[in-house]
Image 1 (cartoon, rainbow, N blue to C red):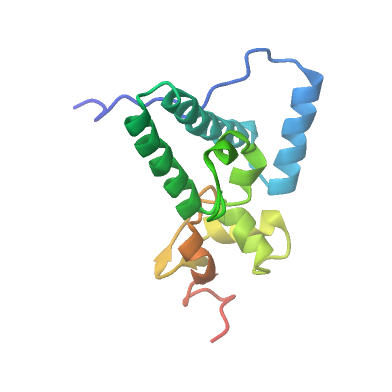
Image 2: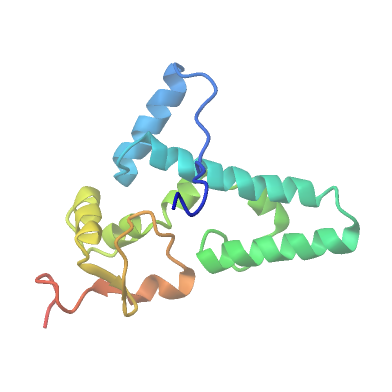
Amino acid sequence: MGDPRRLKKKFKKPRHPYQKDRIMEELEFIGKYGLRNKREFWKMRSTLGRWREIARQSRTLPEDRAKEVQQTLIQKLIRLGILENDATFDDVLNLTVEDILRRRLQTQVHERGLSKTIYHARQLINHKHIQVGNKRIAAPSYLVKREEEELISFAPTSPFSTK
């Protein structure tokens, strides 16, 4: 039968493997946001890079098409909660990896006070004690949309939920 598709990496490794400043920065983010390994950080950094690449390429398009692409990208980032409602196009190019890491489900669970530590939040999510709306999500890297923020809670069958 074979594989149904060709799997591709969703991140790019750093070009130089041993740069002390970069390694220390990565370790700081791993500790602060409870990431499992550097690969998770690289995925978020690659996602940000793709959004910034779209923003840069849109400047070379004809004006009407550029406006359409820019508005689509800004609306997507506003819906994800990465940008504010009054954001401009220049704000897309000023985004950092930390802006994306703050929107992860793991971080949101910890900030809402549902867990004692950021690592406890990760364990709750992996063990399916957390739901967003009526849907259980077992991926700590899930990017929480703005309208889903208030819907984060314990699953009804979880021993942590208050009945």
